[in-house]
Amino acid sequence: MSFVFTFDPTGAGMTVAKYDQCIKKLEVAGQGSLKGRLYHVCYDDPADLHVTDVWDTMENFQAFGETLMPILQEIGVDPGQPKVNLVNNIIIG
Image 1: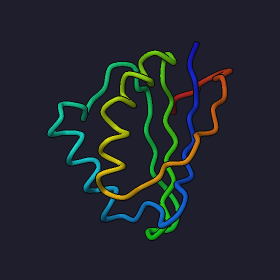
Image 2: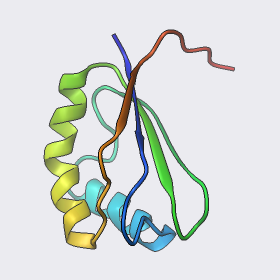
Image 3: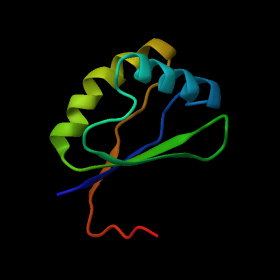
Image 4: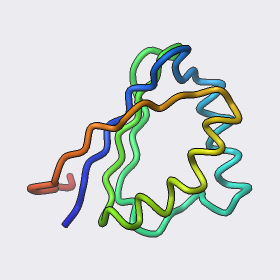
């Protein structure tokens, strides 16, 4: 069963610079391409970005969070609580 996670960071928010920094730190940590993450989308105002991920299981998402959360804390981003939904269907193309 797949899940959709939507993050709307609180406080100062996620800027393009902070997002790019986060992606680089994840790659250095060996978490650039992840087991179980099906899709990743970053979108909206460059000064207030939002992220939506689709994961194959809750367990794979939680394992990723063990690396992601300290990185977000280090760069000063509070991701807030994600909105989580079950995936009913995915159509590609």
